[in-house]
Length: 118
Image (tube, rainbow, N blue to C red):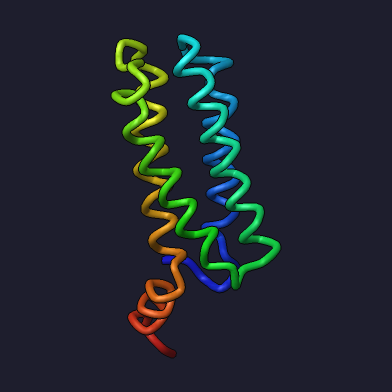
């Protein structure tokens, strides 16, 4: 799925930046706006940390946690009425969790072992 280039880290930065900036183009209330900004920045930061220190597995776990928090945030922060903000949180939250799980060292090793060897 991902290679040693750590493409997932770059993807996390893009996902985080997209989420943090999304209040510029989706309707929000204060809860939605600040949730998207804060969790977006945290997701992007974990991607940047992983780019600099790839051996730091804690950042992958943190990224997964932030993805879960982002996914549940429309219900927890009561902004499900704001369709664009909710969809952003749900979609980016799920993708972030998938990216984080794929980046975990144990999963990364398993994916590399499954790849066809030439």
